[in-house]
Image (cartoon, rainbow, N blue to C red; front, side, top):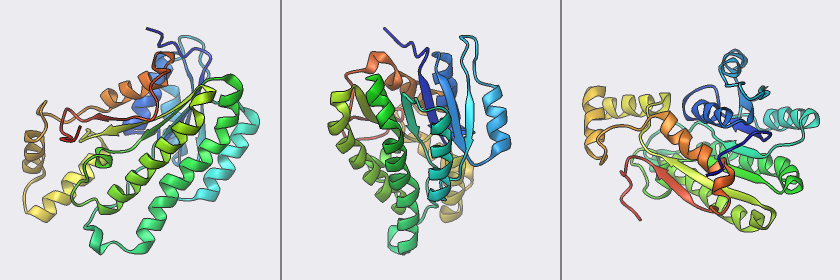
Length: 262
């Protein structure tokens, strides 16, 4: 099985913590040059220093806040002037705050759509030309199992994550002829800061401890535990590899079997 990414360059968003950082680590271990994108420069410096360089990889970082589309646009355009070749794009952005969808304001939908769909669109447009030139491209979107099964209490997130999945499927139909695949990885309950926030929210709403909420959630997962970030990252790394060349347009749940739909 060819998992070798030596000589390939990966642009990984939201990569100073959680699934994004874990994905960057795995891609580097497969030989990729990794460029981290996030808003905290201090954390970016620390993360870059921890990436594997045993195969001569060269790692970089770009400071950009995905809540500010123009800042993202400017930062990425400047980066691509210096490093125009990108073979792998991992779109990963934190989700919005939770709450019932009926209570969500229009601005919440607009802001989240901008952070996820619009930024993803810009990033794809920015890197696809080099992918076409190389005849190799991987666009991987880290979304959520809410694409297949909406999660109660995450109304805005459910809506926008679904839009990203539809965008990605459409893109996969257009780019496959150029050797570019587009796929979605759908994490379930994963041990990250995002999960901590969900547990805290549910704890307050249900009048239970976070430990009680966690145990109830685990009871609904066939493997009876939360996933680890590195397990989700392993799926990202495989989809980025040459071995996954004929896998495109799929939404792969990495959730311990929790999602009940086919």
